[in-house]
Image 1 (cartoon, rainbow, N blue to C red):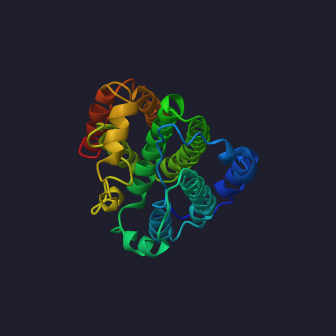
Image 2 (spheres, rainbow, N blue to C red; image 1 turned 120 degrees about the horizontal axis):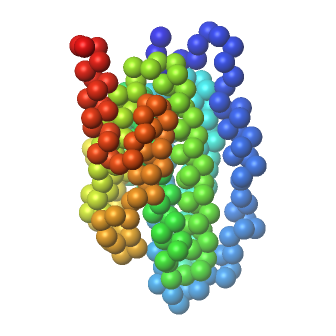
Length: 269
């Protein structure tokens, strides 16, 4: 039986627990973001998150048989589109305008892929996006956008924690998916500022390729996250879960490859 299908045993849905957890942490856009205090004289940085629309369509297709995960996607989609609305309102506050008729041109349909790889990719992607947002919140020049990015970073970390729970259940349900999880994690961790790996950058075509400035994200990263070693927090959190899933302590990316080879050689041995 595929790991995405809940077993016939009485296994509680993770959605029930995750709904309560995320509901308690939910913030109020209308009262907690002080758009009336935006300092328009300062240089601003801002992104949008409309790509969550395409990712949701992909999730519902690839996880069609997993009612539990598809239920969780309803929360994830709501919160990600709330991020989009928050950032859009900020841009409108500083004088940017949008042509809604142009949005359909940005629609993408992603090729079908193995669900376990998709889940792993988004787990690492949420960790990385939280890292980026944290840096923007600490170094951005305008106070309101700093607060927005800090708020969004906390959401992304919670989303990553939810994905981690589904990865744990995947390994418990079907242990032979673990090498795939390890391989995708290693591939996602091999990232640079000039070629950052995130679900919006690695598809073909990539979401960011449709932007007016496709190189905008690398520019932002090189400005606010300079240097080669800044991803240590991302690697630490991802490797902590990989260590838990494999039962083997993994202290660095170099420790992943021999472990992957070990699992792949196990059937032949």
